[in-house]
Amino acid sequence: MTYKDRPAANYANRDDAIAINTYTTVLKRPQVPHEVFAAYWRDVHGPLCSRVPGLAWYVQYHLDREQDAHLWPSQDGITPFPDYVLDGGVEIGFASAADQAVFNEASSILFSDEQNMFAATVAYALPQSSRTLVDRIANPSPNGNDTLDRMHVHFGPGTKDPEAFAAFMATLAETLAADPALLRVRLHLPEAYDNADPAPPAPDVMHTVPPERERLAILDLTFATPLVRRLFFASDSFSGTIDGQKQNIGHVTAFAVSGMYTYVRDKELTLAGLRGSRPAQLIEQLGAVNQTAEDVRHLMLTGTLD
Image (cartoon, rainbow, N blue to C red; front, side, top):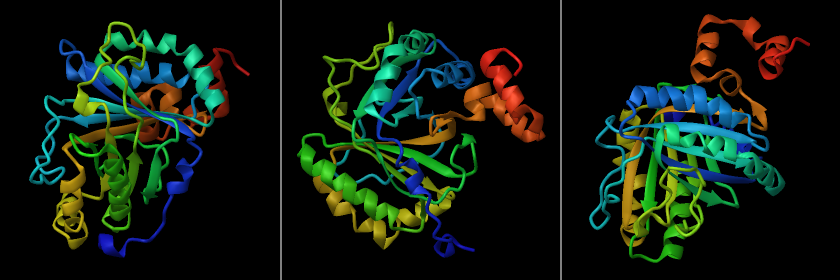
């Protein structure tokens, strides 16, 4: 079966419950080895964040700096963001503004941990949430570096009209989602970032951006393989967007996703959120079904036997 023959199953509406969210870019501290950073973020910081009240959705996307030279085709007049290097992206979502207020009130315990591994974090606000246009991936809560070809592409208007830029990015996302080569298309169009109101308020971590990154659009894209991706970029469907890209986009930088880790979904801790990402992988790998039983879950959450 080729990707063009793929069944039309679409799970995009399962993200509709995320009414409000943020997309946070993260950069690790240069003195921390990458392996230590990734393990701490997954298995120490991740479970801590998962337990802060109010959360409905929490996902870490670990980014790979050296995976692929052809993540997004370059176009004349569109330049990479200067000096833009990231080690991850984070989605934190809420079912309501009231839930977000609960999280914000309790979040200092989380933000005080950021200084241990992050040099910079920038939380872009999405008060109207993000939009999943298509999701043909059955697993609602990935926890690992699966075989799929995942990427996050960051766009900015540069000196071009920001309103026209935002409108074009919505159209571009719809064009991509309509093609069977795309397994997942999720669009983030956050509010412009304000350096005068840095977020998140984590101590000893940088939260400012240069002017060209105050306004971003992020496309979260998944293909079956890099080969399918490269074939799509050579297609008429993608070629038809190039003129619009040149007219509306000033900057673009693509990041390969090396792992997607889900800790909270629909206000419920996943196994990764409860135990840590790598312990959850071990439980799944060994088929340790006893570790998923309600009495074990209760014990891990409360420290007592029911």
